[in-house]
Length: 197
Image 1 (tube, one colour):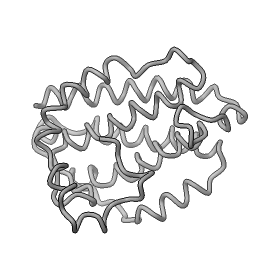
Image 2 (spheres, one colour; image 1 turned 90 degrees about the horizontal axis):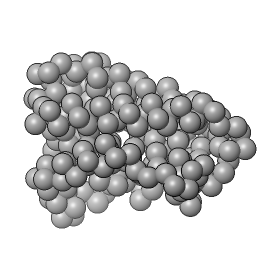
Image 3 (cartoon, helix red, strand yellow; image 1 turned 45 degrees about the horizontal axis):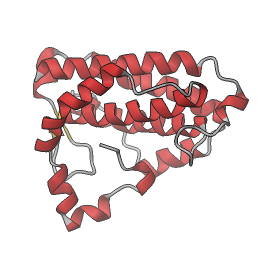
Image 4 (cartoon, helix red, strand yellow; image 1 turned 30 degrees about the vertical axis):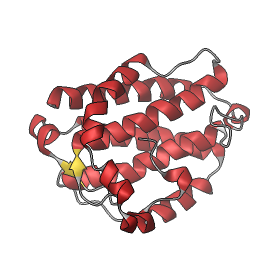
């Protein structure tokens, strides 16, 4: 289990480094280009990843014992959505790097034992589940950005391998029960914000 946690974090770091290298070269015009997700520009795809990193870092940091100020998700989304494309791109670089620094700093014991209350599921999940959800989102939306400028781009091979290995863990996760609970519907984020896990 801890080896899979480590591999997932490594895949997330690779995803970030690859995407960050591209993002730093993009012009304002390129940021305004439609991404691989047809309903989003490149900047909006980066905004989605950046706001997800900002929101997703807090519960992991809290689980690790850090005091984190609470800010509700709609307020965070509204702030990101109101930002200019360049600010969305720079915000992605900042917040995704900070999210990674948080998970990379976890001790071996924390990586194997931490449970994370994501706030929208009926109960806390393992760190591995939280990381897997993030990798699924990052791998797909990173591709949305990269394919805009390279039609031959694919999902990073290492990420795909980890996601396949995570599938048994996913099956054991609480998603099935979450989706079947009527009470969870009222806590569900808007469709554009539901993780693609």
